[in-house]
Length: 391
Image 1 (cartoon, rainbow, N blue to C red):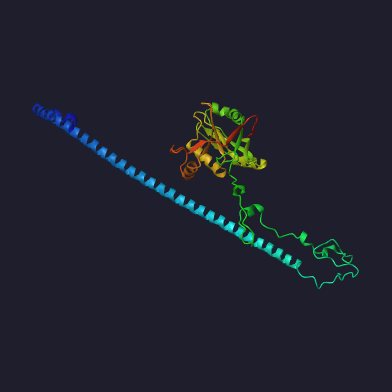
Image 2 (image 1 turned 180 degrees about the vertical axis):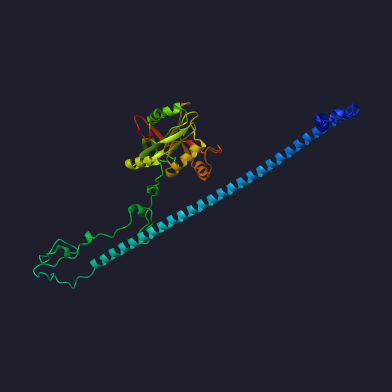
């Protein structure tokens, strides 16, 4: 059809063909057009069916891949649980072994004390019929009665030679009294087993346990004016639609962290990112003032306050080094401030295993970050601000 309709009319010899032949060809072309449309319709229907089948095959394949991935995750979780169970069992066995050793040691010391006390009693009860009524050191003075220091002969000038009486007898050292409360004394004849009040047993000390609640994190205090101080510094960048970054330093006191310093490093920023430069400035500043890194703060000039995929990866090393580390995000456009951390059950594990760079996708459920519940805002407190940006 294309040959007769499009190609032949442009051929140099087309005008030499008789009108009868041209009319005959055109007549046949008109008869072919309906057949061509019918074939086209069938081809389009066949193409759609093949495309549908291909999509179903791809969907089925993706479902199989998802199923395999879920199975792999379940196996990983199972292995982790088994490893945790083994570690917990080893920990319990180690604690039990330590308690047994302490108990055995305590019994040994008690036995030594009992034997020494028994020997002292035996020496005190020895018969004295064959003793002289005089000491032999000074025949004009009576002998020193056994077990007393009420009389000291003049002949004994060195007091260090005088043996202490039984009343001054000091028994050997025994384990701590708190430990004794948790042990059963049943190896001394005639000694009843003491009643043990385990409510007085001291709790195990966990250095990551918060004194303020059950979050498992120590409290972090933030000066109320810190954010306003930072936003004022960041305003020139905010006007240019550029992010600004700051590092939060502080100290540990009374088992709580206190943010005291806001460090502004030299940096380069864009509307949705910010990178620190000259990190040696930060290290020198921290070492000079003996400060602890407690987190970071940055702006989102055009977005709301949240942790992007890049922010999640930036937060990971802070929180890996210190579980209480925080990330403060300020959104000047929406007047929002968020104080976030990676979730302990999902966020740390997912970001720790992620190898992607730049902005990329992370599943939102279960959440990878959360609002901090271990942060307290302090009134009438200001942070010391150090701007190390090089003009």
